[in-house]
Length: 326
Image 1: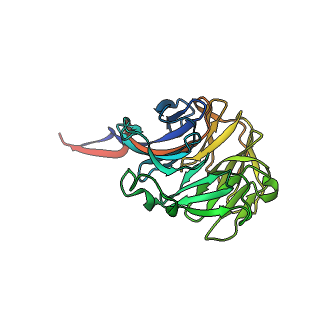
Image 2 (image 1 turned 90 degrees about the vertical axis):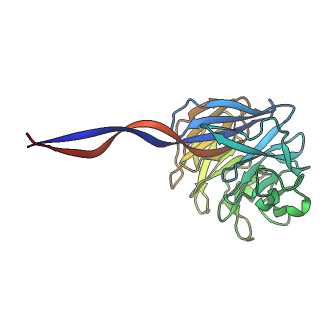
């Protein structure tokens, strides 16, 4: 009897995570999406989703992955728009490219947006010195609005100067399951560069190292933020630790986004989207940024990770034993 060990080579499906980065360019009047394979050291592909006259000066952008909704603010039109998305054949696009953008919140001047894990919308109003909140229920259950736009009665002021401390020309906003965060663009070393508020408690400064702070991205343990001098810092998001200079390699970093899987993306007004590792428990310096794509006047950025199926060959560690007799 002869016994043979056969190593089987099979071809099958493997989930390959792909990041879709939504980037605003206010000077060009465009909203773009960058498709980037997670962990790839470059090679992102750029597609224009919307351009003038649909948008004039798009600034803030936020994405609700669960409900496939994209929010974008227009500084000139003073509206926040909601755009339903589709994901088919490894491509993210507008659900109806020919449809006119729907107004979600009307008559607001905001540069920064965020959507929390429950789908609630948050935005800052720098001129009015306040942080606003719109519940997910205001937008209906489908990809379109329940009404023409959100009324004033559906919005809530989360923090406002001078009533609450820690609001000083607010910049970017972010939210997780427990708290809301924002940056300040004026007197940050005094009032707080990055603030955190939880359960109607007084805002807490988790960083005070920079007077003017723009973008913000929050991970399970850290808050990353860009300042007015071209630097990006990281700090523990619960406070109690000093901010660490992560990198000064970007020309004019503005918006930051976390992909939920260890990468921070940077919108650089110098014309580039960058990335760097952000999945660590403590902030640490990174000498180099990884170039993802060229996007003119990149200002706002939001990240959405999707798993796409790709055929790949793999050696299966199983042995087939055949008993052959002669």
